[in-house]
Image 1 (cartoon, rainbow, N blue to C red):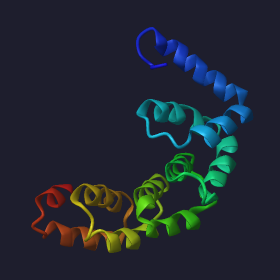
Image 2 (image 1 turned 90 degrees about the vertical axis):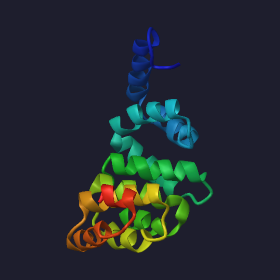
Image 3 (image 1 turned 30 degrees about the vertical axis):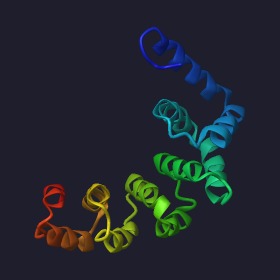
Image 4 (image 1 turned 135 degrees about the horizontal axis):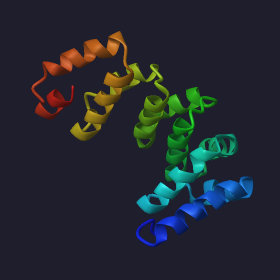
Length: 168
């Protein structure tokens, strides 16, 4: 159901019920629905998963390290681990930055947790990136970065890339 109009209260109540059910509901959601790209389903995941980090964390970590899991499931696991402030697999997640399909998820994770170890990875990866991705990476550097990021951002201010210039 869409969370609009007359359905709004029903949807919110159903989500609360799933949270109350606990482990069986979380197992079903995380192991069967985490691969969603659909914005409505993802909103549902966002309203449920973070509510019980003690249940979600171990399951999300299981999905993340399962190399047979769908890429979207693993990327969403990274996202939610960041959202629930789970650092148990921090090094594993940061190492996934070397795999192109996980870079944005890893950057988001680092942003949620203010992980400064991402700085050199972003700085190294930034020059060949397309402008939209570069903008979000620059945003992360500005938000969590230290001295190395400041120097890098100042040099980007001197660049002639207008979109990058406005973002930095």
